[in-house]
Image 1: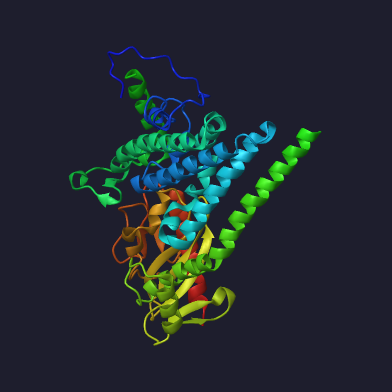
Image 2: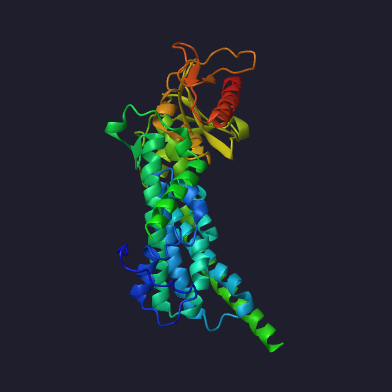
Length: 213
Length: 202
């Protein structure tokens, strides 16, 4: 987090120069250019999965893997990808990785796959994955692109887990499915379980985060 | 022109590579995935028949083995049901129907005397997590264990799902899930249909 006394430097352009180091690419995604709080991407899943901490956690792992690997792959191919079809190509790469995750889960962790239901497949439509491929991986070398994807996934995960850590206890009186003793007499707030509560929570979080910048 | 050709060739090549990778993986693991799916359903039937402790996770092979050794399927198509080979325990009937969002499927177990339910389990559902999806939670399912099967009421219901907190002891009633009225209504309809089929059997 940046010290509030220091003058904030001008924002970096979205299409970063090839000179960005892996560490810088990784770090700025966590807070300074957080995909959810700053770029307002990945909102759909931020609303849909954050009523349960466990689902959120697994979704986040899937997203970190997909963003990192697809950015790496797109960056490897970046000089060969024809410009006019570049987004189709990015989507093809992303979808392949997501199907690989889904298949591996079905084969080796059927209980987890069953818990997640349709969420894993929905990683394909997460704007962050394609956003990083288009904004960073297309103009940078593979290793920084990989770290940029990891950072974006972790930045997203931080925000989602925070939302889930508020929504699940208030909505269900549990955390990760474990009943919370001190909330034994809490009346479950159904609003917290449905998507609108995700909107309210995210809006409050955005407000706090932006006023601290 | 040359650019267009390059674009088409590149796209076709990458599609072929990605397609081959994904299909190859599916092909390599398809059998395993199929066994997992079957085993997941068999595990639920085994639990209802009292042949497997509830909630214990068994490897697919162990489930399939126990199912083949101890369970017998009777009847065809809609009349298909499972019994224990040793003759004890309930009769397990599959049920399925439309939920609030998507198909809900599962098994219901009718006690040997045909007068009460021994249990209900869901194998397939995509209801809202935290609301409708709570039909899978033990507290909801436990309500069906030992539930008396009533005579059909005016709407043809043998069991009723009533607003949470209003069920009466001794009546064929279970508490609904607050905030998931549509899912509760669908489950009531689906289970009653399944029960109708089960009781119509000779």
